[in-house]
Image 1 (cartoon, rainbow, N blue to C red):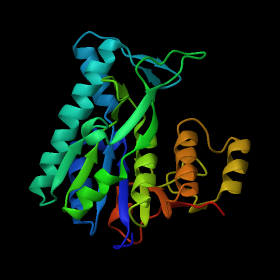
Image 2: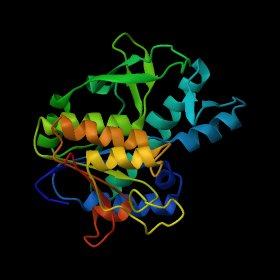
Image 3: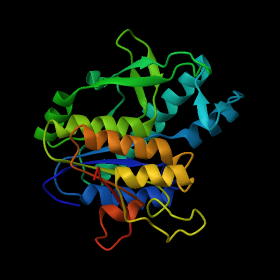
Image 4: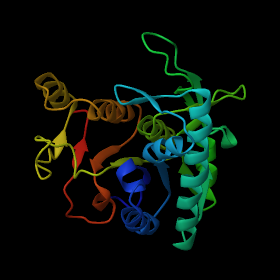
Length: 261
């Protein structure tokens, strides 16, 4: 990772859900030089909290339907417990972190997803991001830690996909300076064979993506992640990579580089 680039890093649920993995990741993240942003969700913990409170999490094709009760829970978990635990840990590692939801400083404005075949409830689709907030943080040595909660400008909070937020904040950061977007999850990268963790496809351009998608080699959860990657590149982000936590501090780590051509 280039030291002179803004790093926008999104961590997946498998890292958040494993205290040892999260601690190791945050140690590496804290050591990254230059301006950086961290984005997280917390869906598994929110689901467990729902169960404890006797609220059945409603899902459709792996996506959470956010009811009034669900919104209260995900806000408590994402913007509260998970966000502040991460911020506190980064402070202990001498990284001056500040927690954000999209409502804080009007960082991310969204609109409620229109009802079509499925009503996803209080789910938001990002409309605008505030690069002035990022610029202020970078200029003052602050590291934004952003959760997957946004707002609509009229007092309504919205549950929003963390991968999408990462892509949109990377686009916002690219208006401040050269930006690298990193998706960290449990695998070493995009895999040619989902049963072989070492079958990493080291480079994917847009043509490759269409062919892999048509062949069924890439499907389900990886499709929207890659859509976010290409959208970010089209809108000014300089570099996008997908891999596990090793990509941020181990130069020889396997990972997938995403490019337009």
